[in-house]
Length: 194
Image 1 (tube, helix red, strand yellow):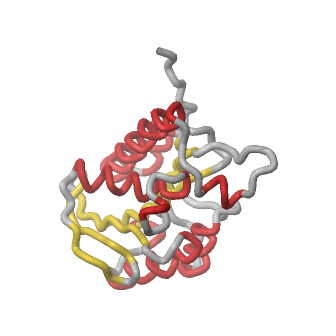
Image 2 (cartoon, rainbow, N blue to C red; image 1 turned 30 degrees about the vertical axis):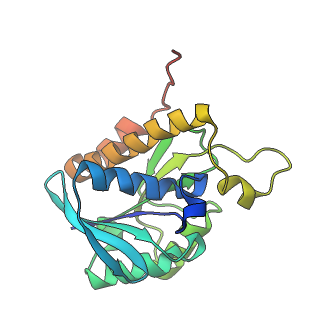
């Protein structure tokens, strides 16, 4: 069984902001694979279902981004998930251009507070993550203002494609393993001009 956690902030005011790209990806997975919602447990909204023949738990922590680890750790413990082999975390990355995705097997938080909290609560940084580029903050902007902002129309098209690619990357990890997924998805995505 795999735990797939998409990070974000609960509440209408945060919907479809840069910081909520993990929530958006989980929503796509829920829809595409008809994963029924199971309710709220360990401060997270979750559902259990099947993706690519594997049992999965899809999780949206409701703790706000900076405390994501509380929910992820709680659900992992409850369902006896080994974070180092059965956890996939999906989140925003300001170091990647909008539309790019990167899969990693492990690593530091890279300044991302949600990941920092997950690493602290799990006691390991060895878990699979899918990072979705949301673009660097404009000069003079506060980082919090940037990650809580919404995308321009042009960016939104790239983001919708990236969210869709992140969802198919999850399937690839489940069927062929993380190395195969990294080989396929970590190449720079060439955005085709219309």
